[in-house]
Amino acid sequence: MDELYPWQAELWQQLSGRQEHAHAYLLHGPQGIGKLALAQRLMAFLLCKAPAQGPCGQCKSCLLLAAGSHPDNFILQPEEADKAILVDQVRRLVDFVSQTAQLGGRKVVLIEPVESMNLNAANALLKSLEEPSGNTVLLLVSHQPSRLLPTIRSRCVQQPCPLPSPAQAAQWLAATLPEVGDEARADLLALANGSPLAARVLHSQDALAQRAAVVEGVKRLLKQQQSPTQLAESWNGVPLIWLFDWFCDWSQRLLRYQLTQDEDGLGLSDMRKVLQYLAQKSPTGKIVAAQDWLLQHRQKVLSKANLNRVLLLETLLVSWLALPGQG
Ligand SMILES: [Zn+2]
Image 1 (tube, rainbow, N blue to C red):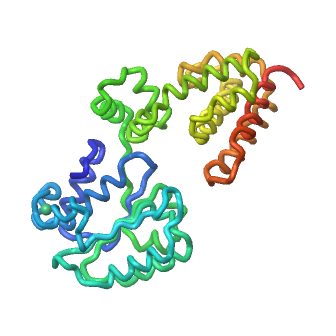
Image 2: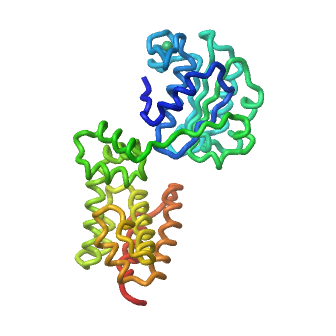
Image 3: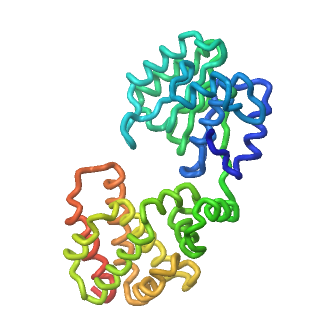
């Protein structure tokens, strides 16, 4: 059974209490708040033969769904993570929508994330949205609804998905990772921008230990105990996007601290002293230039451009080493 997160309870009551369902829902909200789990639960609920507060978990439909062999559901995701949903995939979906339900109930389509459709794929989907066929419900999940064609957005019932409050996020993470200390859990949540689900993933990837090694490295760099090249090579196991996220975050905090002198804005305790030192010693122009470079290259990292990892990190570290001091 798909987990219903505590912050979704109220929305679930509304959704499961509806007498009639829309032809298409656009479930949207930031990444890492459990939208996919909600959509999967809604899919199971809409297909269930004996739904109550949720899907019953025991009927033929629920059992087929759990076994991954339900004939009346269609899940459309990129074939490779972070890649586009292709028009051929959408054509298979359009065929599915035009067929009759084999179990005699509803058919449910789930697309996640919708914005990963390229333009051809989106146009092909529009047909299915324009000409609802039989008893089909489309569940569109989007992290960035602003990136969708307006014609797609306007044909769906917009359903914002709730974010956990900081207290709910902390409580859920404490229940999920009881073996992790309070401080470490707070750090994980901060690194995950408040998303408890992303925090759990970061924990499974050992993010705090990797971060500690990176912070130690930055300190050695600034004390000139390690060269940019050595350091860049020693970070081989750290996901590049983490490094860019952290350095982007640090450069932004540096600039803010120079303006406000507010120590609360220095972020996680591990870098506070270093950031304070850098903010005092570095000309603003150099930090701005370093930040511009970071933002530009972060885009390239995100788009999976073919990058020379060590060279890229070396360039980054050389610029950070040169932050303190004039010229
Ligand atoms: Zn059922």
